[in-house]
Image 1 (tube, rainbow, N blue to C red):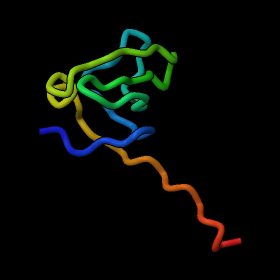
Image 2: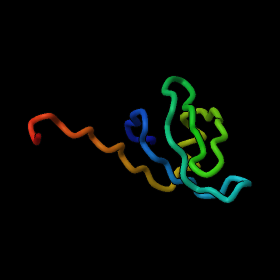
Image 3: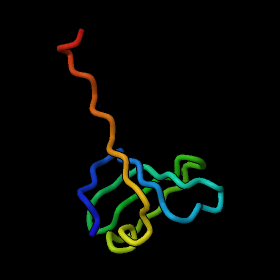
Length: 70
């Protein structure tokens, strides 16, 4: 099953995109997941089930720095 995704997470797929890129950024959440290729910028929609089958790893988005550190 696909773990919880958030916007801007990076997903590494098992097979490369025709441009050669493996990593995709999550740009849309819902019944279908919107992904943007980090190599060429192409956007695609995949169902949650297909993404769960094709995903190799998921890297969570970096949390923004808080103002407390300033």
